[in-house]
Image (cartoon, rainbow, N blue to C red; front, side):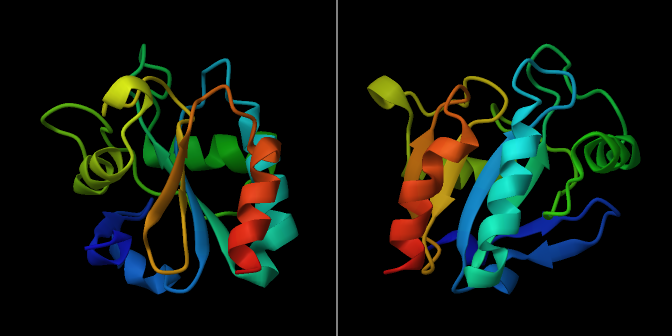
Length: 160
C-alpha cells in the first residue's frame, strides 16, 4: 500500500486519485488560515515554484481541528490562500486529520510515520509529510519546521 491507493476530495467536491501524482516527490501538509504558522504558505509556494518542473508538488489539506483555525468554507479557504499567499499548488477539501473522523489518507500517513515518541496523532497545523516517487512516506516534519528547511531532503529525492 502507498498513497496512490487513496482518493481525496478536491476543493469543488470531486474525487481525485492520488495516483495522478505517481512518480512525483510530494509534500503533504495539513493547513490552516488563522494559525501562527499560516505564513508558511509563502515558503510552501516558493518550494512548489522552485521544484514543480522537476517532479515535485505540495498538496495542501485544510483542517479545522486545532482551535478552529480554519473555519471557512473550501471556497473561502482557497480564496484566502490565493489572495494572501499566491498559492497555486493543489489544495484539497477541508478534512479531519485526527480521531475517528480522520481522513483515510491521514490515518495512513500517521501510521507510516508516527511523530516523536511514536505518537501518531497530528499535533498541530502545518505538519508535513515527505513522499517519494514510489508513494512511500519518507519523513514527517513538525509544524515549526520551516518549508525552506526541507530543500535538501526534497533535492535528494528528486536527484535519486
